[in-house]
Image 1: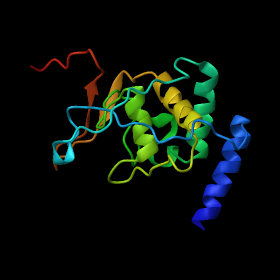
Image 2 (image 1 turned 135 degrees about the vertical axis):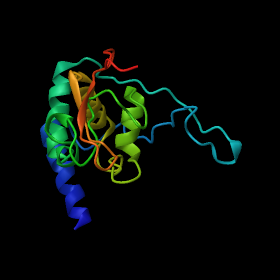
Image 3 (image 1 turned 135 degrees about the horizontal axis):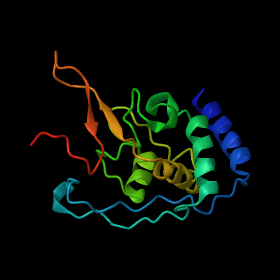
Image 4 (image 1 turned 90 degrees about the vertical axis):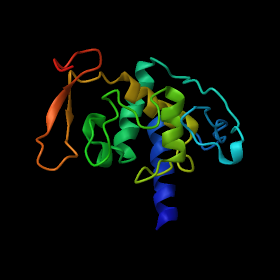
Amino acid sequence: MGFWLVAVAAVLLGSLLGCNHTDRTRAIPPSVTDELYVRAGGSEPPAGKLSNPFIRDARAAKDGEKLFSTMNCDGCHGGGAFGWVGPSLVDGRWRYGGSDGELYHSIFYGRPRGMPAYGGILPSDAIWRIVTYLRAQPIPASVPTESWIEGVPARSVPARGERSGKN
């Protein structure tokens, strides 16, 4: 079953982006150095700065939007990436970093507690198009937040740069 899912995804992706099956960009990306990452044995991981080849490319963002729904990203992150079962990808709050390279890494390698790794399924160009789509989304004026404290009602938090009125 898994093989057929990958095969169907590859065919859909190829037809969606109009690309052939030879992806010269299929390489394992270098890890990103960040002071928040734990270095096993005190060794620094190989570092590399990833840069988005499609930054501010409207066509790539449109392709990324199609891929976002085709690959069922909206099944967890909701339509428009506003969040649902998975976190919002447009509210400006990032657990694993919000740079283009860090978003690429999250999609390529996956993350604990639910985010699958798509590096073995999607070519690099497709991942970058999804990143471009996410970066093209405006941060909402009000970010809905659910309280983690039982009995405390959910409320909206101010957008980045706004003050809540509380000190």
